Length: 197
Ligand SMILES: Nc1ncnc2c1ncn2[C@@H]1O[C@H](COP(=O)(O)OP(=O)(O)OP(=O)(O)O)[C@@H](O)[C@H]1O
Image (cartoon, rainbow, N blue to C red; front, side, top):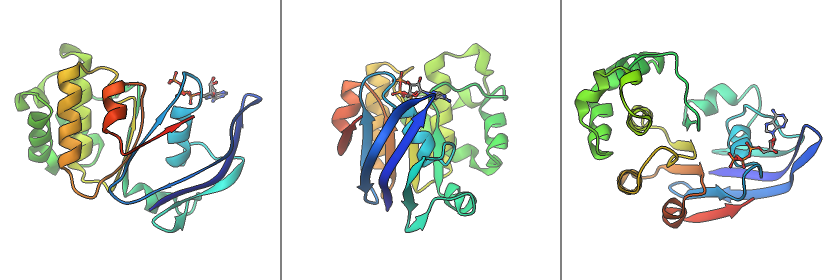
């Protein structure tokens, strides 16, 4: 379903990827791991089409990632970045930003599964914790029902209990392909495959 073939990329004069290849099947959870600065976030950005490799090819569902195919491919992806600075003040506004105002109930459903009271969807982001905000964002993204979920350091703001709830929630979803980047041991254990960069 996703094929990454012979990717080369250098940034700021540093060679980050040199002939990187891997592929993953529908429903698989693959996690990029490795020391800080090895390129985990950059690889997610390459998959999102935000950073173009110097050489090599990426395919989603048989379609080669290019400027032309990107809008169509993006419809099937959701990207949950590491440091989330959003120009919105609460969960409702986030859903508007995502053009998903009709997904309030679905978002609240995932919020509860992630251990949050669903009323937090109304709460000002400046008045809740980083971990609560992160879970509202994850819940909103899951409500979009994407085929592929890209997650950068999804456990960064979560305690062990919340990490386990997130893992349980993702494992209960059918046929979702998950590509993540993480150092967290619990998270790495739940991945089907770890690629160490
Ligand atoms: N826009 C850029 N210009 C130049 N160098 C960059 C750029 N973006 C990232 N880099 C460099 O690319 C390398 C990989 O960065 P990246 O953020 O992907 O690492 P990471 O493995 O995700 O690290 P961390 O675990 O700390 O988040 C780093 O050496 C970083 O300094």
